[in-house]
Length: 280
Image 1: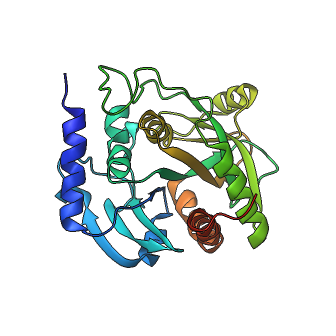
Image 2: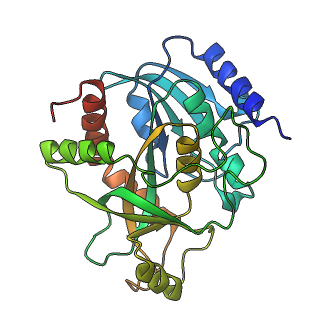
Image 3: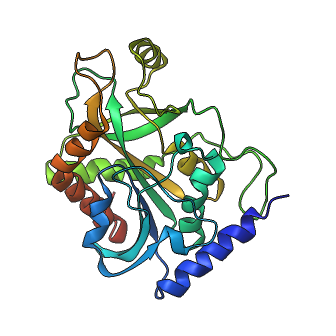
């Protein structure tokens, strides 16, 4: 049996040694072009993935490959500036490993973000979408293999993969700040190619609203370990077949940069409500 539990604990101990202080209560996974949010953490400590045992390293532009521990909007946070993906040659379990470390360090809430292709023609690039549910098309699973009960149960329930109370909180935050926030289903595809028009038609038939190449493994292990999850996609482009323009990664990062201020304002409003919950 692999020593996954021990590896998670070793990586967590290495983070604590480099970023001492109070344990974080919220973990953030910052997707393509969104990592700058952690640059605004107060009293921040930065830890390179390369300095941590067992940590995979990202090779994708826009994914810096470091952890940032600090405070934002009154909350002690730990953020991943960049993630790894299956298409880089990793297993789903390896992709999800950093999220396990965030939770082992104390995060009770995992806030996952991503850049995604829009499947709804009425959603222009720059739209923010609250993830209500997901469809896993990755062809690998983060929990495949032997299970260690110290991390979580063999068969975790995914009925509420994205916590309803956190989604309600995010909607309140968006309304209070005047930010348009759509809600929909995210589908994870393996990549690295963008979807074909035929695949996009299939995904829309299945009920998906946005498509990307990440997020699901991290959500799965967070639920496995008992953390609550909130997910937000930044719709950075129209999916194949919904427009005539070719798809490029440059468009993804450019759109994420354009809506950065709005996205960060939403995250701040969400964190503030996590720090000081409003009356129901």
